[in-house]
Picture (cartoon, rainbow, N blue to C red):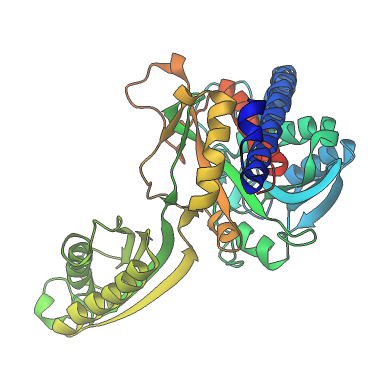
Length: 447
């Protein structure tokens, strides 16, 4: 080899030595990573019982959006005990903690949502929720029916392990425990992520990239599913008030029936999806979930109110669908001599994984849980306000499978239902994923 090098020209020798040094640096990084991986894997195994205990506490004591007072206090106290810089409350009931590594470097954020849902739990778990609160004028149970209790436990475990290994970190980690992901109360109007961004959660120090996960009850436990680009849909609300003319139910010809017209509008909206949307670009969903009209069977009312949800994956398509809904509803109403007022509420943008960041970090997931346990998923039409963070900085969001293998159910309990259930064994994979993403991002050799 030395003879071959000596025969090279001076410029070629310089290139050779540069490549050689880069190769040695990468080898060194890989060896450090391998040693660190063994250490981290052991620490994850050791913290599992504590992580499950945290999750069960949160599950038994759920709180609705922007009411997560006790939840926020418990998280803040846990993070303070680790010696982290803790900010609480943030965005009403959220918590932010900062861990500075042993060496300077980038800033990465890890996020977990902390709110529960107005769902009455229906199972025999010893730690099942018995909480009941008033909601929208009626009493309801409260349940972590979407896995946020697991998200909190996973991120708390990640924070504890990273704090034990901060000397290995070349940069800073910001832990974000976000309230109101499921939607702020009507009187509020702002999602937890949107409000956190407005309050500067991505600043001081400025975050370079953010990672988040979501437990998924329909994916096998411990598996990770992700995709580059659009992962989850945008969500918008739509209210359509149809104003007609009331009459006796026995003489409908004296009326301009807002119920019949509303039925035509509902059917007309579906042609926007089936005949007016270029579905090869991305899915479109228009669902009318409630209709309110009338008070007695033999009275045709003057008004009807339709309430629905809109899901899209493309900004241009979102704008087009909004325009199509307004045109369809108003014109159908006009054709029957009625009037339709359409109010569209912009809620969450689409959850879009930054392509460059996804390409860079996907191998970290494979190293964390094994390549055989990582898969590419199709887009889903549910929504996530993690998208507000991704609007500001590169973000990578993925699903962590939590379908309990021993349940053997023909139809697994889905999210937002009274029977929702997750496998706590999946939490280890979530912590490993967060740890690998963090270390790989912060400690990667500079390009």
